[in-house]
Amino acid sequence: MLPTIYQKTVALPDGREIILETGKLARQADGAVMLKMGKTMLLATVVSLPEAREGVDFMPLSVDYQEKFASTGKIPGGFLKREGRLSDYEILISRLVDRALRPLFPDDYHAETQVNILLMSSDGTNPPDALAALAASAALAVSDIPIEAPISEVRVGRVNGEFIINPTFTQLENSDIDLMVAATYDNILMVEGEMKEVMEADMIEAIRLGHEVIKQQCQAQLEMSQALGKTQKRTYHHEDNDPERYTQIEADVYPALYDIARQGNDNKKERSQAFKAVKDQYLARLKEEATEEEPFQDELVKRYFYKVQKKACRNATLLEKIRLDGRQYDEIRPIWCEADYLPSAHGSALFTRGETQSITTCTLGTKMDELMIDGAVIAGYNNFILHYNFPSFSTGEVKPNRGPGRREVGHGNLALRALKMYCPRATITLTPFAWFRTS
Image (cartoon, rainbow, N blue to C red; front, top):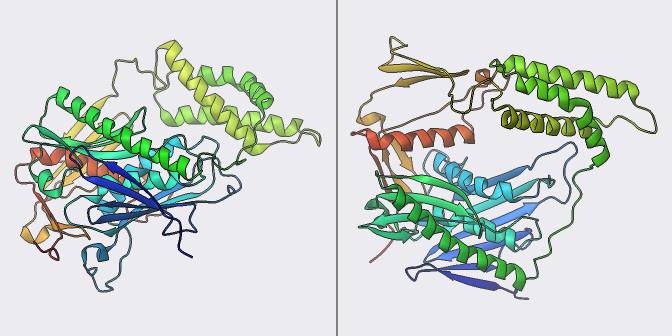
């Protein structure tokens, strides 16, 4: 029997259309949507487990955006000729979607949830990264997974003084604004991008225009939910709460935690040890007082303790007008720098702000050192490479070294985008891979 297919069309200001289709593919997923714009197609799926794993008190959400090489008629490079781990570019797009979606799940929803966004077809004209969040949110909208509101992201560009929503690759080459805006119908969630010294009023106007289009896309998702009967989300029970126990814990430990917070100790380790001492003493006391009728609830007590600690720190900062490390509102951490710290590197610097330190090196190379980018949609060369590494010892932790994580990739990209405009010889030459297209 043929499946029941539902489609919703959303128009962009220039007349181009985005089609959201559900019911045809990935029917065993909790939600699945195929987004179409021209010949570009993204399949977004979402699956969330019915129950949370024991001891989980956070939202275990994973978002993966992947561009299939077949979408542009390419075969993956390398010896294996097989798609492997996500590229840095795909990780960056995954983070854009993750940052917009994550805050909208209920605070007490702890079931493992996975969002997959696959680029299945690309026309080489429309950048798919600006469509990924809309596809992911639409998949959630047609599922029974609880989320506060649908979201979307759009790219805002400006060519010859005219703002363009989701500009093409060609338009982006001549754009002095490249801004990604994420929002719900009511609120802006995130803004990320780069501009060529535009006026502040122009940036605000770009955000406003982007939000107007996002409102239409959010409304379309709400209409999809209603049409498919997905307005009622699943019931769940992922947290046991005891308001009376919280009130008791707050009364027992709040004064001591507030006193530590208001002291303004600039030594983070000593401050953490002081908070830990209060917690350890309190937990030991509760264990001694526990009975069969009122057993000690370890996870619940720890969760409430940290909640009270957060409240005490916040109140101390607001009421005492002093930060946790003793600084006033208008004070920054002490900063000192040292250039040429490493004698054999081409360039180096040591930067220190408070307890944060960075050793940065600069190495000059030749044409052969350029980074070749071989993606499904874009290919080219990058002669300005900025890598950011965050080793575990920098925070006094013990973790295995497993290569850069998503956070490191994301933060390195932010630094690269901030600096490349000021490096006269820095070029990142990327072109859409579209050799298969015919005029």
